[in-house]
Length: 325
Image (cartoon, rainbow, N blue to C red; front, side, top):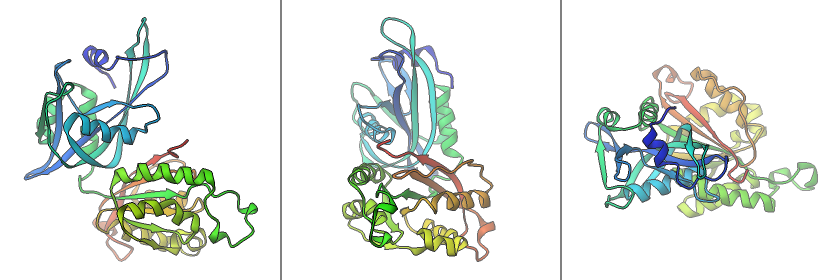
């Protein structure tokens, strides 16, 4: 996407060499009387209107940076729902030349707070989407707003996680259902805990495998909720009734708030593929590395309300790689 010269200058501070500069931001929204209201911020240093965003700190993931930057620039906490897209362009670097910059954007619902003018942002406006689009300085911000508006803001979200590392099955002498996470897996679990809480899960489901339950047990403890065992999300259960597993996931999606589901590598690619095909989505190869996450967004679809599960269809599916990868 193209940017103006002012935007290039604004984001070109602190570049080193030719390594990509990573940043993240969000389309921050809240419910208004006539639909969603979008947060647009004014940066006095550059006299521009933009979506909140900023550079990643060392070791930070884009999702963490998006939430942090929203808080720093607007004063609002937020809950992420889906990845909206990536903007890339080149920015100046000290000593001449340029470096690539990559910015990931998420949809984010405001979850309390208040704005106070600061050094970076001196004004925040909550606007209807049309007014926000008109005010935004940069075309790529308007494009991201359009991407946000392609789906209903109250879409259902399921976080489908593959369990963290648990070693090789051949190295475990006991019942495979009892195989626990390894030390590396526990590090993945902790990283996932930090990441997935940003999406505000309210319900947790797991294949009845110790390694799956251990992957999400810290999150359950943080939220003060239990983990619902679901055999259809295990490899053995899925093989016996894949259509039943699809219906079960749709019922999970239809519940209140965002759901977190932990499953296995022999389930996730086929399950996501089936959901995509029935919705007419082209995803290509469905990856499923240990510790990775699919954010599945569902919208209403009356054509599916025929006894074959809730009236929902998969509207978007975005892959978040292992946070330690």
